Length: 327
Ligand SMILES: C[S@@+](CC[C@H](N)C(=O)[O-])C[C@H]1O[C@@H](n2cnc3c(N)ncnc32)[C@H](O)[C@@H]1O
Image (tube, rainbow, N blue to C red; front, side):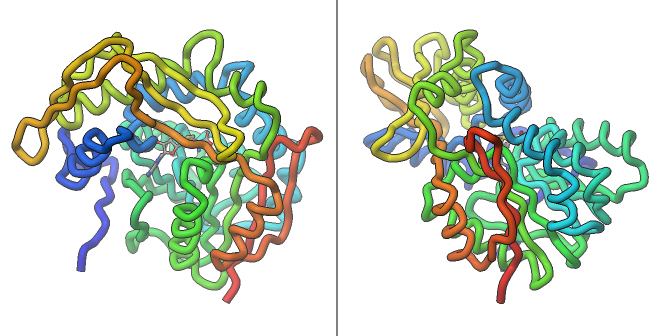
């Protein structure tokens, strides 16, 4: 049986990419329409840049979701239940979950993130603030397979998936991911998920292409990360950020565009691979699907959950949904 790799905070962390990561990057860089998965946006610097994005006036999702938690936290806790095993998916700096600890009073807090170094630092600080809560950090990629290790309590698992990260998956991938959560949550578990709702193009364009250029730096950092992971030689100055709402596809897209001709090399399975990018060639780095509330609920229901309650902001820009596992 193949078991999923998690890295705990006390282990030495691998410095280079494992074969699976290298294969995935190679496949994307070599594809006719080049792509890099958005999960590679997050190394330690990428996680810090994302924190900075959350402070930007243009980036409404974080503050809108936080306002929903602030306004409806007590009711969210009543519906979701106290004393759960709170599994925070893509926990980042763990701030959103921590803001709910006093209300949710989790029996165990499990923070999961691919950006292991950043996660471990965040969890260390959290342990000092909440010494009474049993905490685990799992450095892992949950995008294709998801299996929690035995140290995660089996009872009353509440999967916390804020920030509309579900939007980084296509609807089909999101369905597969939610099915895997359903398989891991037993019959007494559920999800508490934040979903960004469809809205006007100007608001979305600004949110993913801010005036200060923080989102541009966040997107460009993926090339720095890929250089590190597979010994590539991307010249970051030779690429430009684009972030815009594609209304026909119902998603924000982020791309990097080559500003001059260049040959990029990387290590693929011990061999040197290369690709020429012409000016105007793009690498697709992120999708962020925007949902209609009814479609988000239908997706949860197709995946083995029943929506019990939805909370939104007055503009109906963002929804927080609690859904219970069903048989
Ligand atoms: C948009 S940020 C959200 C951070 C935080 N939960 C929030 O709502 O502000 C996405 C987070 O998910 C993590 N992440 C992205 N893809 C992942 C994957 N495939 N496996 C594990 N973590 C992932 C990133 O490192 C990042 O911390």
